[in-house]
Length: 243
Image (cartoon, rainbow, N blue to C red; front, side, top):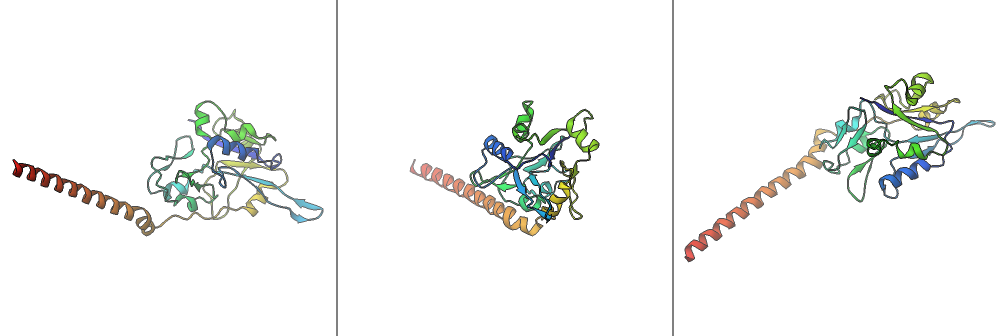
């Protein structure tokens, strides 16, 4: 079974955002939201020794994704290939998985009221195609493949050239999006956009926002069913009396 990963070469990325445009068009992402984001670090250092980079951010499909733990409905899950997906049929739009992601890679779609994010273009992979952002990158800075295949490009870039993960002392959950840099670009990105600790909802929060409304809904449905049964029996009794 493949274990998918992505590598972005920060020495090549020019910040053109062709990847974000391709992603938004491919998945009908609503305005103001994104599955893939290009974030400039801005200049760091003192003239003439200034450094800068573009951080291409997205879901990292982590080895230990806290978003799965935060989801009360089971909509967020991780497949055997490592891809973290969302089942829209199970998503209730509670939004608990959004702050649970240390990389802020999720958003609540205002049209569908479902949470959405990058899924490595899983539907394209099933058709034998690469993710849209990879095929559209004008600088050829993005690479995708099987991290367990010694013949794949991502295997070579991670284990041969030392592509790095964006982690911190507080957050080490095994992201599977890696970054290359020859002038310390990954370190610059970590300094500017360090992942935040995941915020997992408490049992009390789950009760108030998820289970409590569902309990009231079920109770209402039960009452409605009983009322319908009562009036049905009442009408039957009236019909028998008329006869």
